Length: 75
Image (cartoon, one colour):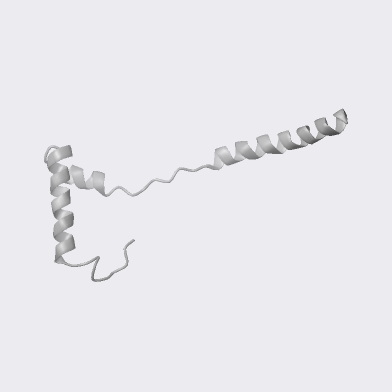
């Protein structure tokens, strides 16, 4: 979020946002302003990396001891 300040508030910023929304609606949504605003104001979706971290942990947890055991046996 943007902190409230003179730069981030005011009529000029509001007019610029409105103009950008109108341009986006005209170019990409065929004039449908409501659909354009919905696409523009979608929050960021963050991907979960739980499975990849689990898989990495399992593979490292099994390969490191196996590598050490292989080095011990070959010496």
